[in-house]
Amino acid sequence: MPQKNPKNTAPPAVAASDKFKNFFRLKPRAFLLCLAAALALTLMNPLHLNVEQQIVFGALFMAVLSWASQAVSQTVTSIFLLIMFSLFGMTPLQQVFKFPLSDNFITIAMSFLMSQAIVNSGIAARLADTLLARFVKKPMDLIWVGIASNLLMMFLIPQPFSRTILLAAIFVEYIKRHNIPRATSEVVMLNLFVTAVTTLMMFLTADVILNTFAVEMSGTSISWFDWAKWMAVPSFITTLIMSGLLILMNRKAFSVELGHPVARGRLGDSDQDSEHIVSHNPFSRSEKIVLVLVLGTVGMWMTESVHGVSSAFVAVVCVAGLALLTGTLGHKDIKSMNFPLMIFLTAAFSIGGVMQSSGISEAMFSVFKMDGLVGTGWFAPAIIGLNMMVHQLVGSTVTSLSISVPGLRALAGATMNPIAVMLISYVTVNLHYYLPFQQIVLLVGLEHYGPRHILKIGVVMTFLTPVIVMLLFMPWFQLVQ
Image (cartoon, rainbow, N blue to C red; front, top):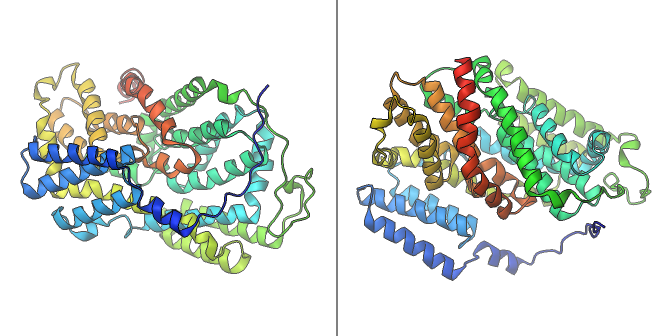
């Protein structure tokens, strides 16, 4: 008999001293091992770097090891890396802090607040009742609804961080209302974010940051339809493969039943009948305003190319309206912006610019001798292997592409379509990850599942990624080019 999950209760308040300890968390043994490895690599200087480059490369290696082992808190490590980049990175500060100075930073921050307002207002509960409950009869159904939700929402919100944050709020509400066990909910939420990664590859506008950057790295221009021609079909098949893999790896997690829905009434409604589902109640005035503001914001995001108003400005106006007109946001909700994650994203997005400006990217690429493979059947596997290696070294999809694609494109010359070179690299770094920071979309959802889940699937994907690229994507590229 499946065990019932205990009722969800509010977590105890965290004392200020505990927050301080968590912020400066240190595992002495792991920290010393990371420091020793970073110092050894820096002193060995295998890339023949100058002193400043050595310091930057050593700091990056130390940060990657610390993030992987959690030797020091993620926030402290990120701040350390930003300081080292600022002092020794030979890069303008506006490039180092490009992410917090961008519209994307504001849009993501505001998306957290919008998500919290949706939950506070009861809209998330309504959506969980009316949308999820219509199609979900058993926990396994949440896997397929997660795929469908990502496919639908990528046409509405062209930024995976924002849309997965909003989708997660709805799924979390459904999970709470149906008392789904933690082990099952972690797999369901991981699937939501894993399929967000694979579906964002389908269309150019599914991720306006990464996909636009990838096209820029290819040195060519690609229309929306050309991208879809190359990527839509194999990416959709990959989405199904990834979900099937998660199901196979976590079969026991789905041997449970949905609990009876627990009512979670509207804000301020404490006398809710426990047998009455909130979606059967009429909309309150605040709920209507929340719905109009959020749908209006999504509509503006969808048509940004038409009206030219930045997504960040639209998001700020929406959040201001939610706070002033509905009362669904207060000072206590500022914590939902997840500041540690925003600091980490700042560090992660700075890596590519610093590696390029400091000349380390060029030095890294010169180590890999691939000239003799150009024009042979081994060149494509070498592209995959190089990208997997670089991605593990620098831990960022954007950074990996900025290091590998320009050099590979120049190396390939006329022997391979530059779009194919870029897309092989792009697919490889999107699918191959061991740790949350190696795939930022998964990092955004880390509060819903543990790093061990990502590590577990990453081990399998080490062997499966080359197979998917070689036997699925490349034959498709040859068919459509």
